[in-house]
Image (tube, rainbow, N blue to C red; front, side, top):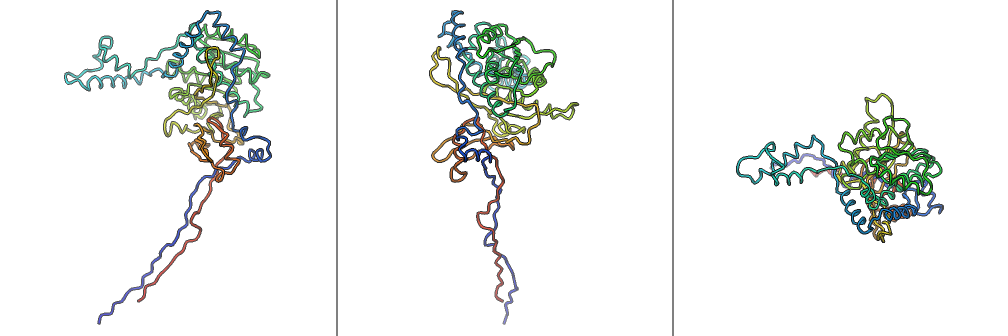
Length: 463
């Protein structure tokens, strides 16, 4: 008789396990929550909202523009059409090609010519672009023919009609945010690089009319300077002590409280000239440097180029003197732009404006722009670093979706509901729009959806 002997075995079966997840929870700013609870502010006026929504173009400017066009015997229909074409051209522009990029472009031309060529191979050195129309067309497709704009009298008037209102609206939106967030800042001097028709100075003089005393404008076009001077004479409030130069001052002294460059970097012939200009502008400012460009891929790349250059410059180990800089707006951080790091789409914003009414403008339109405001100081320890809404908020039934740039340099999409986030935060999110900040911060939370206990069941088989 064979006796089967079973050895003793022990095994463990996990009935349930503890699950941990570190999910950040959005919490409303305490000060904002207190103001809302005490009915001291309305949700549509929470401290993260950037006002005004639609800057109003000055009436004195409307009147003066109409007078100038009448004096010059300009046909309103013709200049309106010319302005539309100029705006289209400006939106489609690209930066000039760098010499280091040219060989790769010519290589593409050579490859295209040899793609369907079954005979002798064509070399780019042997191509006569003046006679070979096919090669010339391929070259035009791959190499952008950048040309500086000649701002003569008629082109200046066309630019004023086509871009004046939009430029003013963008400047107002950005400068008003500085005033709202930096309440103790009272600038006395203003430096405008590529001043154009003077819209930046108009906006600054209205916002800080009681403190700004001096304006320095750099503009290469004589016709543009003449037009700007004419408009500045009609300005209300009066713009005092305005100085115009066609070239950048050789000396870095004096410095100015605000230095601004709006829609100018694309007029410079190459990368070296752009970086040199940005460095000069940074050395010229005492407090704020503002860079604005079109809200296109090209415009954003130039703004981000300036942002990265200044942040690297002040943090360079080879610098002898110590300097500080931080991004005041729109980024809540000084890290690499997540738009570049993730999906390579432009970080741009929108502002509403009303076109010139005497030229047929009836409805509000929106203008896309990219910008950065750099402040010449360390980031304050009490800086809220609230998330910035970087795309239009999607408002749906009982929830709103906000796409935000966070202080840790990441993009985040948050779905706000009353049940999950509370009434106050939900109403704040629903009242916010593209470009606003949300007064909240994220706190790490530990969640345990399956309970805290782990059951360890041990079984011993029968011998």
